[in-house]
Amino acid sequence: MDHGLRRTALAARLDDLGVDALLITSLPNLRYLTGFTGSSGALVLGAGEGLFLTDGRYGEQSRREVEGLERVIANVGLSEPIAQAAARLGARRLGVEADHLTLAAHARLRAAAGAIETIPVDGAVEHHRRVKDPEELAAIERAQQATDDAFEEVLERMAVGVSEQQVAGLLEQSLRRDGGDALAFPSVVAFGENAAEPHHQPGHRLLEEGDVVKLDFGALRDGYHADMTRTVAFGAPAAELRKIHDVVREAQQAGIDAVRAGVPAGEVDAAARGVIETAGFGERFTHGLGHGVGLEIHEAPWLRAGLDEPLPAGAVVTVEPGIYVPALGGVRIEDMVEVTDEGCRVLGASTRELIEL
Image (cartoon, rainbow, N blue to C red):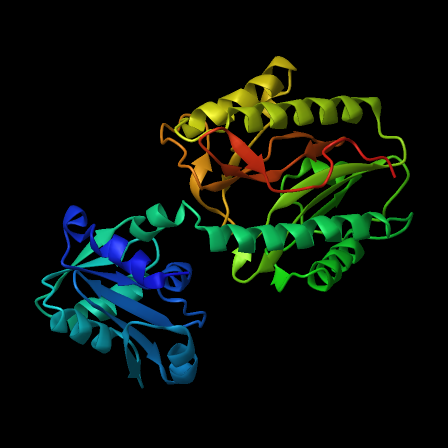
């Protein structure tokens, strides 16, 4: 990954952002622009050069990971060194990431900055991160492969009396064994009526015959995330849940068919949502259709009702409609897709048909 080219592309937008230099403190954005994977760092990026700053814990690590930038190792706090770096770059207006810099951190920076004005900037790096390069796509595909493999393993371990927490533990073991570095996010495992909660936290509910099982999980690989949801049946499900699964599967396919570079995000949401509304479950689909996936599990672009932003080719987004009925259960089916000029490419290999165990 050429982090220098990414910095050059961002630096070319400084005038449009109304700043002389940009301070990057978000760790995913910092990794995107420098390759740094530690937990404390900053980048001050000017039109012609930039300086990377971190503390003494990460001196050696940053030497290995950060190329093409002068490094500043601070002993106590980064506010003063950041202000000095901005002054060195001749910045009078320093852009800061409004979505990531806390009020306390901003106050410390303002105290150190003196005559340098700090300007809030929204989503500058995230705008570039929407489109994945080939290496990013390859990392996401490796994460997805581990996720598909873990799904197959866990299905074989389902049995009467196993708990939601036990299945969540099995998922984590399988994701690591099958090539993941870690969990992309805490797994959602929901049995029976608990599947009516979109983001149920696994508990001590035991698996019974006739339960639906909703699994929302993914692997993290090389810094990139996977995200997949499947709802399966343990034994014969209730007729209403079988019908709901059919509707959700049809809605997901409608959403997938609507994805194409240049299509407004809201139109994709509407395509899937319309299927659910026509089936009479509109009020039971309680969230947006999807979101971007990459260095973060939830990132731009977003698939939500009413959004006019066109999808860019090379973005990776989820398509995840769901129907949730209290006291009965729920169904969600989710896959990541790569947006292309011709449509999209589904990254997952696991079946979307109803599996009855």
